[in-house]
Length: 404
Image (cartoon, rainbow, N blue to C red; front, side):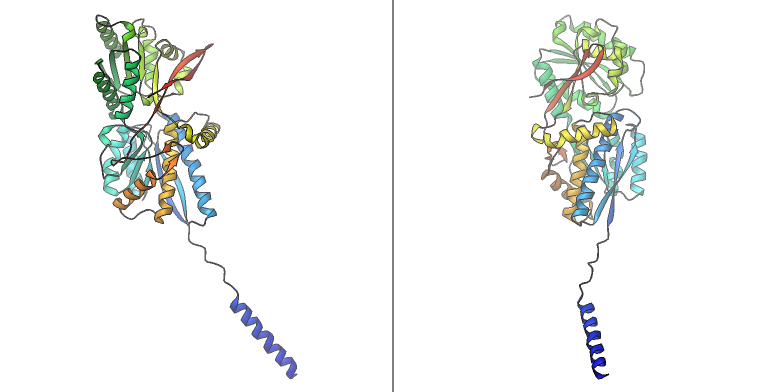
């Protein structure tokens, strides 16, 4: 009996000892969700860019969240997209919802007019807003909550003016959509063209909701005829900085021989527009006038990143993305770098600005090195020019050239 009791006591002790020394399972850290808001046009003007940008962000979030999970980083991103239809009032309404919802990170909006409308809320609530496509110099100010990944209007303006002048143009008739981004780019191209020795004249502005462009086109025609007293048709061009309404404008201009007799140029808001190719009259006018517009170039050095991304976005959406689409992708990845480096979202607007600026300027993504200036804007850029061609009745965008 004594032996049995001894064996029992030893067994019990061993059991207690081994259980006591057994390594406890590590406590898993609590996963925190970081909300990201997107402000994009999904059903209005420039919706092709809004749809592709949303998809690019979703791809980036999947990549970041999977990477975080593998490395046990306790954060996950979640996207909510608000459809602004590139309407400043809708963007403002969405921004109020974003502010009330506790969001601190926003990607978008697409246009400068929308960004101007929401900036006071962003600054007052310390919400970081990073636009992939706004260009106006009106927003190029230091120490605010607005950052922009597209090269500004002065950079685009100088590139376009140089290209137009180098093609022998000496006189430009300009028209513009009535919004900050379009007007700013129009002025930048015109002033740079004048500085190089050319002359410019404005034939007016129009609203994005206009459907009758007869008055605008009549004024353009009048100014072309005035210029022909001094310049040849080959030396005259027309500049239109506008968005989707360019299709209606071209459709109505197509039947006029004077309007079709000179070259036309566009701005970044109509770069490789998907909708025009299904409008025969508008597309034919673009072909006849050798129209082209500028778009931010994707660097060859990053083709291993952007080429498969654009293929994936096309498969997901049926639409072609571009550098502005991939700006949204890069912005999201920089958010990921910042959150990891700071162990969350920095607690004050000042720290958030500084952390995002540092993360941006240390990152090279699908659009190449980011390199923001002191005002939070991309400081340089090269531009691709694309025009339309008619391939047996099938209108397609094609590469015309690149800025120097």
